Image (cartoon, rainbow, N blue to C red):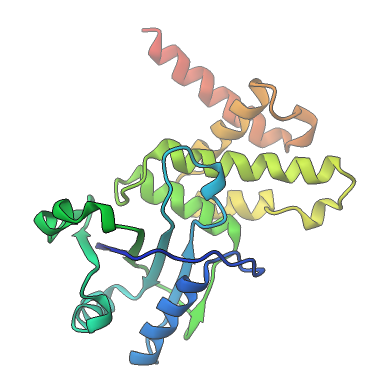
Amino acid sequence: MTIVIQLKCMTMDSSTDKIAKNTIRISQAIHKKMPHLPIRVWDISEFLQDLHDIRRNMVFIETDPLALEEVVKTMTEDAAYRDYIFYIGKRKPLTINETWAAARSNEIRDIVVIVGRTAFKQGISTPPIEHRLVDLLAYSLRGWLPLPVDEAIRALAAQIRNVHKEHNSKIEFQTAPIHYGELMRYADRRYIGPIIEMIIAGLVENGELEESQIDEKYYKNGLRLLKAVQSVKEL
């Protein structure tokens, strides 16, 4: 079950977690009201510069599915959230107050998505960038977000390019923004590993990455899948 809330403008944060300050404030507000509820919070503020059509930050609050209704009730009964726009849905966001949203569309700013997830640690945590990129693509593919799949792909591709820009600038590879092993392990857990392999292969085929810069197995697997897709398109 997914609930989407839109709210006023957020500020950017240059912290190591790469999430906006208002994102942290939102998570802390929920945690203050429900201190025993595990929450994982992240956003797309660090990816916005790489997106073409998305200009608003998108904040993710992930928590126990059994607590979703409690979180929504807590937020909607708080006067601080009375101007927010709510979406709710299992597979596709459904606007609850669509008439109000249409009438005041110029006031819509950033988006908050509350998602039910299991196996969380207690307290507030922020997932690593590999998990954020994979989840952004996974949610987009499932139609859970007001964010097109191609934008999620742009965010991932830009981070992969950044890895090699830093590496080629003599910066140690270990300090690069993402780690391929963790990225692919988590992608497999989310059942989208082959899609990310195709993205990697596509970057190599387009000349944006050198084949020698990528683990051979990811490139070859992705290239094989790309050729299969092309064969289907030519039927």
